[in-house]
Image: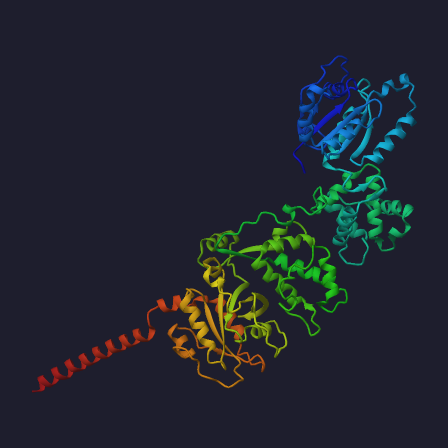
Length: 623
Protein backbone atom coordinates (compact mmCIF):
# COMPACT_ATOMS: atom_id res chain seq x y z
CA UNK A 1 0.00 0.00 0.00
CA UNK A 2 1.12 3.56 -0.75
CA UNK A 3 2.07 6.01 1.98
CA UNK A 4 0.97 9.08 0.06
CA UNK A 5 -1.16 10.09 -2.94
CA UNK A 6 -0.91 13.06 -5.29
CA UNK A 7 -4.25 14.21 -6.72
CA UNK A 8 -3.97 16.71 -9.58
CA UNK A 9 -7.02 18.74 -10.66
CA UNK A 10 -7.18 19.90 -14.30
CA UNK A 11 -9.87 21.62 -16.32
CA UNK A 12 -10.84 24.77 -18.19
CA UNK A 13 -10.92 28.21 -16.59
CA UNK A 14 -13.97 28.84 -14.43
CA UNK A 15 -15.05 25.20 -13.90
CA UNK A 16 -14.47 25.46 -10.13
CA UNK A 17 -11.24 23.55 -9.47
CA UNK A 18 -10.02 26.01 -6.82
CA UNK A 19 -13.40 26.33 -5.11
CA UNK A 20 -13.60 22.55 -4.79
CA UNK A 21 -10.26 22.49 -2.96
CA UNK A 22 -11.17 25.37 -0.63
CA UNK A 23 -14.62 23.89 0.02
CA UNK A 24 -12.94 20.66 1.12
CA UNK A 25 -10.50 22.47 3.45
CA UNK A 26 -12.81 25.19 4.85
CA UNK A 27 -15.98 23.08 4.75
CA UNK A 28 -17.79 26.09 3.41
CA UNK A 29 -18.22 27.78 0.03
CA UNK A 30 -15.95 30.76 -0.68
CA UNK A 31 -17.04 32.70 -3.73
CA UNK A 32 -13.86 34.61 -4.46
CA UNK A 33 -10.69 32.51 -4.38
CA UNK A 34 -7.36 32.90 -6.14
CA UNK A 35 -7.04 31.42 -9.60
CA UNK A 36 -4.74 28.58 -8.46
CA UNK A 37 -4.62 27.63 -4.80
CA UNK A 38 -1.32 26.33 -3.34
CA UNK A 39 -0.74 22.63 -2.83
CA UNK A 40 -2.75 21.21 0.07
CA UNK A 41 -1.45 18.33 2.20
CA UNK A 42 -3.93 16.33 4.25
CA UNK A 43 -2.42 14.16 7.02
CA UNK A 44 -3.25 10.43 7.03
CA UNK A 45 -5.21 10.42 10.29
CA UNK A 46 -8.01 12.52 8.78
CA UNK A 47 -8.41 10.53 5.57
CA UNK A 48 -10.58 7.41 5.22
CA UNK A 49 -7.72 5.39 3.69
CA UNK A 50 -5.12 6.56 6.25
CA UNK A 51 -2.66 7.92 3.67
CA UNK A 52 -1.07 11.33 3.29
CA UNK A 53 -2.90 13.11 0.47
CA UNK A 54 -1.51 15.96 -1.64
CA UNK A 55 -4.03 17.98 -3.67
CA UNK A 56 -2.61 20.08 -6.51
CA UNK A 57 -4.59 22.75 -8.34
CA UNK A 58 -3.45 23.71 -11.86
CA UNK A 59 -3.94 26.41 -14.47
CA UNK A 60 -4.94 25.66 -18.08
CA UNK A 61 -3.18 28.79 -19.44
CA UNK A 62 -0.50 28.36 -22.09
CA UNK A 63 2.08 30.13 -19.90
CA UNK A 64 1.59 27.48 -17.19
CA UNK A 65 1.78 24.50 -19.55
CA UNK A 66 5.23 23.36 -18.35
CA UNK A 67 4.14 23.43 -14.71
CA UNK A 68 0.98 21.51 -15.61
CA UNK A 69 2.92 18.78 -17.43
CA UNK A 70 5.38 18.47 -14.51
CA UNK A 71 2.58 18.04 -12.00
CA UNK A 72 0.82 15.50 -14.18
CA UNK A 73 3.96 13.37 -14.36
CA UNK A 74 4.19 13.35 -10.56
CA UNK A 75 0.50 12.60 -10.11
CA UNK A 76 -1.11 9.34 -9.00
CA UNK A 77 -4.61 10.28 -10.16
CA UNK A 78 -6.06 13.04 -12.31
CA UNK A 79 -9.41 14.75 -11.65
CA UNK A 80 -10.82 16.39 -14.80
CA UNK A 81 -13.30 19.06 -13.65
CA UNK A 82 -15.97 20.15 -16.15
CA UNK A 83 -19.38 21.72 -16.58
CA UNK A 84 -20.02 20.29 -20.03
CA UNK A 85 -18.33 17.06 -21.08
CA UNK A 86 -15.65 17.20 -23.77
CA UNK A 87 -12.63 15.09 -24.62
CA UNK A 88 -9.89 17.74 -24.75
CA UNK A 89 -8.22 16.84 -21.45
CA UNK A 90 -8.47 13.10 -21.98
CA UNK A 91 -6.84 13.43 -25.40
CA UNK A 92 -4.12 15.65 -23.94
CA UNK A 93 -3.28 13.04 -21.27
CA UNK A 94 -2.90 10.36 -23.90
CA UNK A 95 -0.74 12.57 -26.08
CA UNK A 96 1.52 13.22 -23.09
CA UNK A 97 1.85 9.47 -22.52
CA UNK A 98 0.25 9.71 -19.09
CA UNK A 99 -1.48 6.50 -18.11
CA UNK A 100 -3.19 7.24 -14.79
CA UNK A 101 -6.62 6.63 -13.33
CA UNK A 102 -8.97 9.50 -14.16
CA UNK A 103 -11.95 10.85 -12.21
CA UNK A 104 -14.48 12.85 -14.22
CA UNK A 105 -15.82 15.62 -11.97
CA UNK A 106 -19.08 17.24 -13.06
CA UNK A 107 -19.03 20.41 -10.93
CA UNK A 108 -21.70 23.08 -10.38
CA UNK A 109 -24.63 20.68 -10.54
CA UNK A 110 -26.53 23.35 -8.61
CA UNK A 111 -26.58 25.40 -11.84
CA UNK A 112 -27.91 22.62 -14.05
CA UNK A 113 -31.52 23.72 -13.84
CA UNK A 114 -30.51 27.27 -14.74
CA UNK A 115 -28.71 26.05 -17.86
CA UNK A 116 -31.71 23.93 -18.84
CA UNK A 117 -29.61 20.85 -19.60
CA UNK A 118 -31.46 17.55 -19.06
CA UNK A 119 -29.61 15.13 -16.77
CA UNK A 120 -30.21 12.26 -19.16
CA UNK A 121 -28.28 14.06 -21.91
CA UNK A 122 -25.24 14.54 -19.64
CA UNK A 123 -25.43 10.93 -18.50
CA UNK A 124 -25.47 9.70 -22.09
CA UNK A 125 -22.47 11.87 -22.94
CA UNK A 126 -20.51 10.60 -19.93
CA UNK A 127 -21.30 6.95 -20.70
CA UNK A 128 -20.05 7.36 -24.27
CA UNK A 129 -16.79 8.92 -23.08
CA UNK A 130 -16.27 6.30 -20.34
CA UNK A 131 -16.69 3.55 -22.89
CA UNK A 132 -14.10 5.21 -25.12
CA UNK A 133 -11.53 6.01 -22.40
CA UNK A 134 -10.96 3.03 -20.15
CA UNK A 135 -8.67 5.02 -17.86
CA UNK A 136 -11.77 6.69 -16.38
CA UNK A 137 -12.52 5.13 -13.00
CA UNK A 138 -15.74 6.96 -12.16
CA UNK A 139 -17.73 10.10 -12.80
CA UNK A 140 -18.72 12.18 -9.76
CA UNK A 141 -21.25 14.98 -9.84
CA UNK A 142 -20.70 17.62 -7.19
CA UNK A 143 -21.18 21.24 -6.17
CA UNK A 144 -18.67 23.33 -4.22
CA UNK A 145 -21.39 25.92 -3.56
CA UNK A 146 -23.85 23.39 -2.13
CA UNK A 147 -21.04 21.32 -0.55
CA UNK A 148 -22.42 18.32 -2.41
CA UNK A 149 -20.14 15.28 -2.83
CA UNK A 150 -16.99 17.36 -2.29
CA UNK A 151 -15.32 15.06 0.25
CA UNK A 152 -16.67 12.06 -1.69
CA UNK A 153 -14.83 13.29 -4.79
CA UNK A 154 -11.45 13.18 -3.08
CA UNK A 155 -12.30 9.87 -1.42
CA UNK A 156 -12.98 8.37 -4.85
CA UNK A 157 -9.69 9.85 -6.07
CA UNK A 158 -7.84 8.12 -3.22
CA UNK A 159 -9.72 4.93 -3.92
CA UNK A 160 -8.81 5.06 -7.62
CA UNK A 161 -5.14 4.88 -6.62
CA UNK A 162 -5.35 2.44 -3.70
CA UNK A 163 -8.10 0.23 -5.10
CA UNK A 164 -8.09 0.78 -8.87
CA UNK A 165 -10.87 -0.74 -10.93
CA UNK A 166 -9.00 -0.94 -14.22
CA UNK A 167 -6.76 -3.93 -13.39
CA UNK A 168 -9.80 -5.91 -12.25
CA UNK A 169 -12.69 -4.99 -14.49
CA UNK A 170 -13.41 -4.38 -18.16
CA UNK A 171 -16.04 -1.67 -18.11
CA UNK A 172 -16.78 -2.12 -21.81
CA UNK A 173 -17.51 -5.85 -21.57
CA UNK A 174 -18.75 -5.74 -17.96
CA UNK A 175 -16.53 -8.68 -17.03
CA UNK A 176 -13.57 -9.26 -14.77
CA UNK A 177 -10.23 -9.24 -16.52
CA UNK A 178 -8.39 -12.57 -17.02
CA UNK A 179 -5.59 -11.82 -14.51
CA UNK A 180 -8.15 -10.92 -11.85
CA UNK A 181 -10.13 -14.09 -12.55
CA UNK A 182 -6.95 -16.18 -12.42
CA UNK A 183 -5.86 -14.65 -9.10
CA UNK A 184 -9.26 -15.10 -7.44
CA UNK A 185 -9.55 -18.68 -8.72
CA UNK A 186 -6.16 -19.45 -7.16
CA UNK A 187 -7.30 -17.90 -3.86
CA UNK A 188 -10.40 -20.07 -3.98
CA UNK A 189 -8.25 -23.20 -4.34
CA UNK A 190 -6.04 -22.16 -1.43
CA UNK A 191 -9.12 -21.72 0.77
CA UNK A 192 -10.65 -25.03 -0.32
CA UNK A 193 -8.91 -26.95 2.44
CA UNK A 194 -10.53 -30.31 1.76
CA UNK A 195 -10.06 -30.02 -2.00
CA UNK A 196 -13.68 -30.83 -2.89
CA UNK A 197 -14.14 -27.83 -5.20
CA UNK A 198 -16.50 -26.11 -2.73
CA UNK A 199 -16.12 -23.58 0.06
CA UNK A 200 -18.26 -24.93 2.88
CA UNK A 201 -19.37 -22.75 5.78
CA UNK A 202 -16.22 -23.43 7.81
CA UNK A 203 -13.97 -22.63 4.86
CA UNK A 204 -15.94 -19.48 4.06
CA UNK A 205 -15.57 -18.35 7.65
CA UNK A 206 -11.83 -19.04 7.64
CA UNK A 207 -11.57 -17.00 4.44
CA UNK A 208 -13.60 -14.19 6.04
CA UNK A 209 -11.44 -14.26 9.17
CA UNK A 210 -8.17 -14.20 7.20
CA UNK A 211 -9.21 -11.30 4.98
CA UNK A 212 -11.40 -9.20 7.25
CA UNK A 213 -10.54 -10.40 10.78
CA UNK A 214 -14.13 -11.27 11.62
CA UNK A 215 -16.30 -14.34 11.03
CA UNK A 216 -19.78 -14.31 9.53
CA UNK A 217 -22.90 -15.34 11.38
CA UNK A 218 -24.82 -18.28 9.94
CA UNK A 219 -27.61 -16.05 8.64
CA UNK A 220 -24.98 -13.85 6.94
CA UNK A 221 -23.43 -16.89 5.29
CA UNK A 222 -26.84 -17.96 4.03
CA UNK A 223 -27.44 -14.41 2.79
CA UNK A 224 -24.25 -14.46 0.76
CA UNK A 225 -25.21 -17.74 -0.86
CA UNK A 226 -28.73 -16.49 -1.59
CA UNK A 227 -27.33 -13.40 -3.35
CA UNK A 228 -25.20 -15.61 -5.58
CA UNK A 229 -27.98 -18.13 -6.17
CA UNK A 230 -30.39 -15.40 -7.27
CA UNK A 231 -28.29 -14.64 -10.37
CA UNK A 232 -26.01 -17.66 -10.65
CA UNK A 233 -27.91 -20.75 -9.49
CA UNK A 234 -25.01 -22.95 -10.62
CA UNK A 235 -22.63 -21.04 -8.31
CA UNK A 236 -24.04 -22.63 -5.13
CA UNK A 237 -24.55 -26.29 -4.29
CA UNK A 238 -25.44 -28.17 -1.15
CA UNK A 239 -21.73 -28.34 -0.34
CA UNK A 240 -21.31 -24.58 -0.45
CA UNK A 241 -19.97 -21.95 -2.83
CA UNK A 242 -18.10 -23.21 -5.90
CA UNK A 243 -15.50 -21.27 -7.86
CA UNK A 244 -18.08 -19.83 -10.28
CA UNK A 245 -20.09 -18.51 -7.34
CA UNK A 246 -16.96 -17.13 -5.68
CA UNK A 247 -15.98 -15.26 -8.84
CA UNK A 248 -19.51 -13.93 -9.34
CA UNK A 249 -19.56 -12.60 -5.78
CA UNK A 250 -16.47 -10.51 -6.52
CA UNK A 251 -17.93 -9.35 -9.81
CA UNK A 252 -20.86 -7.99 -7.81
CA UNK A 253 -18.51 -6.23 -5.40
CA UNK A 254 -16.77 -4.48 -8.29
CA UNK A 255 -19.93 -3.56 -10.18
CA UNK A 256 -21.52 -2.16 -7.03
CA UNK A 257 -18.58 0.11 -6.26
CA UNK A 258 -17.07 -2.06 -3.52
CA UNK A 259 -13.86 -2.73 -5.40
CA UNK A 260 -11.88 -2.22 -2.18
CA UNK A 261 -13.38 -5.48 -0.87
CA UNK A 262 -11.86 -7.46 -3.73
CA UNK A 263 -8.55 -5.61 -3.34
CA UNK A 264 -8.45 -6.45 0.37
CA UNK A 265 -8.76 -10.12 -0.53
CA UNK A 266 -6.11 -9.93 -3.24
CA UNK A 267 -3.63 -8.06 -1.06
CA UNK A 268 -4.16 -10.38 1.89
CA UNK A 269 -3.02 -13.19 -0.42
CA UNK A 270 0.05 -11.25 -1.56
CA UNK A 271 -1.06 -9.66 -4.83
CA UNK A 272 0.21 -6.24 -5.93
CA UNK A 273 -1.38 -3.61 -8.12
CA UNK A 274 -0.33 -5.50 -11.26
CA UNK A 275 -2.06 -8.67 -9.95
CA UNK A 276 1.24 -10.47 -9.61
CA UNK A 277 2.43 -11.80 -6.28
CA UNK A 278 4.60 -9.17 -4.62
CA UNK A 279 8.33 -9.72 -4.23
CA UNK A 280 8.21 -8.94 -0.50
CA UNK A 281 5.47 -11.58 -0.13
CA UNK A 282 7.39 -14.27 -2.00
CA UNK A 283 10.80 -13.48 -0.55
CA UNK A 284 10.66 -11.56 2.73
CA UNK A 285 13.90 -10.58 4.43
CA UNK A 286 15.59 -13.64 5.91
CA UNK A 287 19.18 -13.05 6.96
CA UNK A 288 21.50 -16.07 6.96
CA UNK A 289 24.89 -15.68 8.69
CA UNK A 290 27.85 -17.08 6.78
CA UNK A 291 28.35 -19.88 9.31
CA UNK A 292 24.70 -20.98 9.21
CA UNK A 293 22.47 -22.86 6.81
CA UNK A 294 18.70 -23.06 6.40
CA UNK A 295 16.42 -26.04 6.88
CA UNK A 296 12.69 -26.62 7.01
CA UNK A 297 11.20 -26.14 10.45
CA UNK A 298 8.71 -28.52 12.03
CA UNK A 299 5.97 -26.14 10.81
CA UNK A 300 7.41 -26.31 7.30
CA UNK A 301 7.48 -30.11 7.25
CA UNK A 302 3.95 -30.27 8.69
CA UNK A 303 2.61 -27.87 6.05
CA UNK A 304 4.27 -29.69 3.14
CA UNK A 305 2.92 -32.98 4.47
CA UNK A 306 -0.58 -31.54 4.76
CA UNK A 307 -0.69 -30.19 1.19
CA UNK A 308 0.76 -33.46 -0.12
CA UNK A 309 -2.20 -35.29 1.39
CA UNK A 310 -4.63 -32.65 0.15
CA UNK A 311 -3.48 -32.91 -3.47
CA UNK A 312 -2.99 -36.68 -3.48
CA UNK A 313 -6.28 -37.12 -5.31
CA UNK A 314 -6.23 -40.92 -5.57
CA UNK A 315 -4.97 -41.42 -2.01
CA UNK A 316 -2.09 -43.71 -3.02
CA UNK A 317 0.50 -41.71 -1.01
CA UNK A 318 2.34 -40.71 -4.18
CA UNK A 319 2.18 -37.83 -6.66
CA UNK A 320 1.73 -38.89 -10.27
CA UNK A 321 2.46 -36.33 -13.00
CA UNK A 322 -1.15 -35.14 -13.12
CA UNK A 323 -1.18 -34.52 -9.37
CA UNK A 324 2.17 -32.72 -9.57
CA UNK A 325 0.82 -30.51 -12.35
CA UNK A 326 -2.24 -29.79 -10.23
CA UNK A 327 -0.39 -28.65 -7.13
CA UNK A 328 2.21 -26.67 -9.07
CA UNK A 329 -0.53 -24.87 -11.01
CA UNK A 330 -0.70 -22.70 -7.87
CA UNK A 331 2.77 -21.47 -8.82
CA UNK A 332 4.82 -20.65 -11.93
CA UNK A 333 5.55 -24.37 -12.27
CA UNK A 334 7.81 -27.16 -11.03
CA UNK A 335 11.04 -25.47 -9.89
CA UNK A 336 13.33 -28.45 -10.54
CA UNK A 337 12.99 -28.75 -14.31
CA UNK A 338 16.73 -28.21 -14.83
CA UNK A 339 17.47 -31.15 -12.53
CA UNK A 340 16.41 -34.72 -13.09
CA UNK A 341 13.28 -34.55 -10.93
CA UNK A 342 11.62 -36.88 -10.02
CA UNK A 343 14.68 -39.08 -10.60
CA UNK A 344 16.44 -36.93 -7.98
CA UNK A 345 14.33 -38.21 -5.11
CA UNK A 346 12.40 -41.23 -3.85
CA UNK A 347 9.62 -42.55 -6.10
CA UNK A 348 7.52 -45.68 -6.14
CA UNK A 349 7.71 -48.41 -8.77
CA UNK A 350 5.50 -46.38 -11.10
CA UNK A 351 7.80 -43.35 -10.89
CA UNK A 352 5.41 -41.31 -8.73
CA UNK A 353 6.90 -39.15 -5.99
CA UNK A 354 6.21 -40.56 -2.53
CA UNK A 355 5.68 -38.44 0.58
CA UNK A 356 9.20 -39.44 1.64
CA UNK A 357 10.53 -38.20 -1.68
CA UNK A 358 8.43 -35.01 -1.57
CA UNK A 359 9.81 -34.01 1.84
CA UNK A 360 13.34 -35.01 0.84
CA UNK A 361 13.19 -32.87 -2.30
CA UNK A 362 12.07 -29.81 -0.33
CA UNK A 363 14.74 -30.48 2.31
CA UNK A 364 17.34 -30.37 -0.46
CA UNK A 365 15.83 -27.25 -2.04
CA UNK A 366 15.83 -25.42 1.28
CA UNK A 367 19.49 -26.25 1.93
CA UNK A 368 20.62 -25.18 -1.55
CA UNK A 369 18.26 -22.25 -2.17
CA UNK A 370 16.08 -21.26 0.77
CA UNK A 371 14.61 -18.30 -1.15
CA UNK A 372 13.01 -20.72 -3.59
CA UNK A 373 11.42 -22.62 -0.72
CA UNK A 374 10.11 -19.37 0.78
CA UNK A 375 8.50 -18.46 -2.54
CA UNK A 376 6.83 -21.85 -2.92
CA UNK A 377 5.55 -21.82 0.65
CA UNK A 378 3.84 -18.58 -0.35
CA UNK A 379 2.53 -20.06 -3.61
CA UNK A 380 1.10 -23.04 -1.72
CA UNK A 381 -0.61 -20.82 0.86
CA UNK A 382 1.47 -21.33 4.01
CA UNK A 383 -0.61 -19.91 6.88
CA UNK A 384 0.93 -16.86 8.54
CA UNK A 385 4.52 -15.71 8.07
CA UNK A 386 6.22 -17.99 5.55
CA UNK A 387 9.52 -17.52 7.40
CA UNK A 388 8.07 -19.70 10.16
CA UNK A 389 8.40 -22.59 7.72
CA UNK A 390 12.21 -22.36 7.90
CA UNK A 391 14.84 -22.40 10.61
CA UNK A 392 18.46 -21.35 10.93
CA UNK A 393 20.98 -23.95 12.06
CA UNK A 394 24.76 -23.56 12.50
CA UNK A 395 26.95 -25.42 10.01
CA UNK A 396 29.50 -26.25 12.67
CA UNK A 397 28.84 -26.81 16.36
CA UNK A 398 31.50 -24.39 17.61
CA UNK A 399 30.72 -21.40 15.37
CA UNK A 400 29.71 -17.99 16.82
CA UNK A 401 26.21 -18.34 15.36
CA UNK A 402 25.89 -21.79 16.92
CA UNK A 403 26.46 -20.33 20.39
CA UNK A 404 24.10 -17.42 19.77
CA UNK A 405 21.34 -19.66 18.39
CA UNK A 406 21.74 -22.12 21.24
CA UNK A 407 21.23 -19.33 23.78
CA UNK A 408 18.23 -17.96 21.91
CA UNK A 409 16.56 -21.34 21.40
CA UNK A 410 17.56 -22.57 24.89
CA UNK A 411 18.49 -26.01 23.70
CA UNK A 412 20.66 -28.07 21.40
CA UNK A 413 20.27 -27.38 17.70
CA UNK A 414 20.93 -30.33 15.46
CA UNK A 415 21.26 -30.24 11.70
CA UNK A 416 19.09 -32.59 9.70
CA UNK A 417 20.25 -31.91 6.12
CA UNK A 418 23.82 -32.31 4.86
CA UNK A 419 25.52 -31.58 1.56
CA UNK A 420 27.80 -34.25 0.09
CA UNK A 421 30.01 -33.70 -2.96
CA UNK A 422 30.45 -36.86 -5.05
CA UNK A 423 33.55 -36.93 -7.29
CA UNK A 424 35.27 -39.57 -9.38
CA UNK A 425 36.66 -40.42 -12.79
CA UNK A 426 34.59 -41.27 -15.86
CA UNK A 427 32.89 -44.63 -15.40
CA UNK A 428 33.67 -44.83 -11.69
CA UNK A 429 30.00 -45.45 -10.86
CA UNK A 430 29.06 -42.14 -9.23
CA UNK A 431 25.64 -41.94 -10.87
CA UNK A 432 24.80 -45.56 -10.10
CA UNK A 433 25.80 -45.00 -6.48
CA UNK A 434 23.56 -41.99 -5.93
CA UNK A 435 20.72 -43.57 -7.94
CA UNK A 436 20.90 -46.48 -5.52
CA UNK A 437 20.73 -43.95 -2.70
CA UNK A 438 17.41 -42.71 -4.14
CA UNK A 439 16.22 -46.34 -4.42
CA UNK A 440 16.30 -46.34 -8.21
CA UNK A 441 16.78 -49.62 -10.12
CA UNK A 442 20.26 -50.22 -11.49
CA UNK A 443 20.80 -49.53 -15.17
CA UNK A 444 23.57 -51.04 -17.28
CA UNK A 445 23.42 -48.09 -19.69
CA UNK A 446 26.39 -45.76 -19.23
CA UNK A 447 25.70 -42.04 -19.57
CA UNK A 448 28.70 -39.84 -18.73
CA UNK A 449 28.12 -37.03 -16.23
CA UNK A 450 28.46 -33.74 -18.11
CA UNK A 451 26.95 -31.36 -15.54
CA UNK A 452 26.27 -31.29 -11.85
CA UNK A 453 23.33 -33.43 -10.75
CA UNK A 454 21.77 -33.60 -7.29
CA UNK A 455 19.94 -36.42 -5.51
CA UNK A 456 18.48 -36.61 -2.00
CA UNK A 457 17.22 -39.21 0.43
CA UNK A 458 17.19 -39.81 4.15
CA UNK A 459 19.26 -42.17 6.29
CA UNK A 460 18.85 -43.32 9.85
CA UNK A 461 21.64 -42.09 12.14
CA UNK A 462 21.41 -43.29 15.74
CA UNK A 463 17.61 -43.42 15.51
CA UNK A 464 17.33 -39.96 13.93
CA UNK A 465 16.40 -39.27 10.30
CA UNK A 466 18.98 -37.21 8.41
CA UNK A 467 18.84 -36.06 4.79
CA UNK A 468 21.92 -36.41 2.62
CA UNK A 469 22.04 -34.23 -0.48
CA UNK A 470 24.35 -35.92 -2.99
CA UNK A 471 25.74 -33.46 -5.53
CA UNK A 472 27.56 -35.26 -8.33
CA UNK A 473 30.24 -33.55 -10.42
CA UNK A 474 31.73 -34.68 -13.70
CA UNK A 475 35.49 -35.38 -13.89
CA UNK A 476 36.13 -32.10 -15.70
CA UNK A 477 33.86 -30.03 -13.47
CA UNK A 478 36.35 -29.18 -10.75
CA UNK A 479 35.44 -25.52 -10.32
CA UNK A 480 33.64 -26.32 -7.07
CA UNK A 481 36.93 -27.65 -5.62
CA UNK A 482 38.65 -24.36 -6.47
CA UNK A 483 36.11 -22.24 -4.61
CA UNK A 484 36.72 -21.75 -0.92
CA UNK A 485 33.13 -20.68 -0.45
CA UNK A 486 31.82 -23.85 -2.11
CA UNK A 487 34.12 -26.05 -0.06
CA UNK A 488 32.99 -24.41 3.18
CA UNK A 489 29.40 -25.52 2.64
CA UNK A 490 30.37 -29.14 1.88
CA UNK A 491 29.70 -31.52 4.77
CA UNK A 492 31.17 -34.68 3.24
CA UNK A 493 33.41 -35.43 0.27
CA UNK A 494 32.53 -38.79 -1.30
CA UNK A 495 35.46 -39.98 -3.44
CA UNK A 496 34.36 -42.78 -5.77
CA UNK A 497 36.56 -45.08 -7.84
CA UNK A 498 36.02 -48.23 -9.89
CA UNK A 499 37.75 -51.13 -8.14
CA UNK A 500 37.92 -52.99 -11.49
CA UNK A 501 39.62 -50.11 -13.34
CA UNK A 502 43.36 -49.79 -12.54
CA UNK A 503 43.41 -46.08 -13.45
CA UNK A 504 40.35 -44.97 -11.49
CA UNK A 505 41.91 -44.35 -8.05
CA UNK A 506 44.74 -42.18 -9.39
CA UNK A 507 42.16 -39.60 -10.50
CA UNK A 508 41.24 -39.10 -6.83
CA UNK A 509 44.84 -38.88 -5.61
CA UNK A 510 45.55 -36.28 -8.27
CA UNK A 511 42.54 -34.26 -7.10
CA UNK A 512 43.92 -34.27 -3.58
CA UNK A 513 47.32 -33.13 -4.86
CA UNK A 514 45.86 -30.27 -6.87
CA UNK A 515 43.27 -28.98 -4.40
CA UNK A 516 43.24 -28.32 -0.66
CA UNK A 517 40.76 -30.98 0.47
CA UNK A 518 42.16 -32.10 3.82
CA UNK A 519 39.70 -29.93 5.74
CA UNK A 520 36.71 -31.84 4.32
CA UNK A 521 35.30 -34.96 6.00
CA UNK A 522 36.03 -37.68 3.45
CA UNK A 523 34.97 -41.21 2.62
CA UNK A 524 36.37 -43.39 -0.17
CA UNK A 525 33.95 -45.73 -1.95
CA UNK A 526 35.14 -48.55 -4.23
CA UNK A 527 32.38 -49.50 -6.65
CA UNK A 528 31.83 -52.61 -8.82
CA UNK A 529 33.13 -54.99 -6.18
CA UNK A 530 31.31 -57.81 -8.00
CA UNK A 531 33.86 -57.58 -10.84
CA UNK A 532 37.42 -58.89 -10.76
CA UNK A 533 39.64 -56.93 -8.42
CA UNK A 534 42.67 -55.22 -9.98
CA UNK A 535 45.57 -53.34 -8.45
CA UNK A 536 45.32 -49.60 -8.81
CA UNK A 537 48.08 -47.81 -10.72
CA UNK A 538 48.74 -45.24 -8.06
CA UNK A 539 51.68 -44.40 -5.85
CA UNK A 540 50.03 -46.25 -2.97
CA UNK A 541 47.28 -48.84 -2.81
CA UNK A 542 43.92 -47.36 -1.71
CA UNK A 543 43.97 -48.90 1.76
CA UNK A 544 47.52 -47.67 2.47
CA UNK A 545 46.65 -44.25 1.08
CA UNK A 546 43.64 -44.00 3.41
CA UNK A 547 45.72 -45.23 6.33
CA UNK A 548 48.25 -42.45 5.69
CA UNK A 549 45.37 -39.96 5.92
CA UNK A 550 44.15 -41.75 9.08
CA UNK A 551 40.87 -42.53 7.30
CA UNK A 552 39.05 -45.83 7.28
CA UNK A 553 39.75 -48.09 4.33
CA UNK A 554 37.59 -47.70 1.21
CA UNK A 555 34.09 -49.15 1.42
CA UNK A 556 33.61 -51.77 -1.29
CA UNK A 557 30.11 -51.85 -2.82
CA UNK A 558 28.29 -53.40 -5.76
CA UNK A 559 25.20 -51.53 -6.92
CA UNK A 560 24.40 -54.26 -9.45
CA UNK A 561 24.33 -56.92 -6.74
CA UNK A 562 22.76 -54.58 -4.15
CA UNK A 563 25.72 -55.13 -1.84
CA UNK A 564 26.00 -51.66 -0.35
CA UNK A 565 27.87 -52.40 2.92
CA UNK A 566 25.75 -49.78 4.75
CA UNK A 567 27.73 -47.12 2.92
CA UNK A 568 25.02 -44.47 3.23
CA UNK A 569 24.59 -45.09 6.94
CA UNK A 570 28.37 -44.68 7.26
CA UNK A 571 28.10 -41.36 5.44
CA UNK A 572 25.37 -40.27 7.82
CA UNK A 573 27.50 -41.27 10.81
CA UNK A 574 30.36 -39.11 9.50
CA UNK A 575 28.10 -36.05 9.24
CA UNK A 576 27.22 -36.60 12.88
CA UNK A 577 30.90 -36.63 13.93
CA UNK A 578 32.76 -34.97 11.02
CA UNK A 579 36.10 -34.83 12.84
CA UNK A 580 36.22 -38.64 12.74
CA UNK A 581 36.82 -38.51 8.95
CA UNK A 582 38.57 -35.17 8.43
CA UNK A 583 42.24 -35.66 7.44
CA UNK A 584 43.33 -32.22 8.68
CA UNK A 585 41.94 -32.99 12.12
CA UNK A 586 43.18 -36.58 12.29
CA UNK A 587 46.68 -35.73 11.07
CA UNK A 588 47.01 -32.98 13.66
CA UNK A 589 46.50 -35.43 16.52
CA UNK A 590 49.49 -37.13 18.14
CA UNK A 591 50.13 -40.67 16.97
CA UNK A 592 48.35 -42.84 19.50
CA UNK A 593 50.58 -45.85 18.76
CA UNK A 594 53.72 -43.81 19.30
CA UNK A 595 52.46 -42.47 22.59
CA UNK A 596 51.64 -46.00 23.77
CA UNK A 597 55.05 -47.25 22.84
CA UNK A 598 56.76 -44.36 24.62
CA UNK A 599 54.75 -45.01 27.75
CA UNK A 600 55.47 -48.75 27.50
CA UNK A 601 59.19 -48.32 27.00
CA UNK A 602 59.38 -45.82 29.86
CA UNK A 603 57.53 -48.18 32.19
CA UNK A 604 59.71 -51.11 31.15
CA UNK A 605 62.89 -49.12 31.75
CA UNK A 606 61.68 -48.11 35.18
CA UNK A 607 60.89 -51.74 36.06
CA UNK A 608 64.32 -52.91 34.91
CA UNK A 609 66.00 -50.17 36.87
CA UNK A 610 64.03 -51.11 40.01
CA UNK A 611 64.81 -54.81 39.60
CA UNK A 612 68.47 -54.19 38.97
CA UNK A 613 68.89 -51.90 41.93
CA UNK A 614 66.86 -54.12 44.26
CA UNK A 615 68.53 -57.44 43.28
CA UNK A 616 72.10 -56.12 43.16
CA UNK A 617 71.68 -54.28 46.45
CA UNK A 618 70.32 -57.45 48.16
CA UNK A 619 73.15 -59.64 46.89
CA UNK A 620 75.76 -57.16 48.04
CA UNK A 621 74.29 -57.32 51.53
CA UNK A 622 74.48 -61.13 51.49
CA UNK A 623 78.13 -60.96 50.52
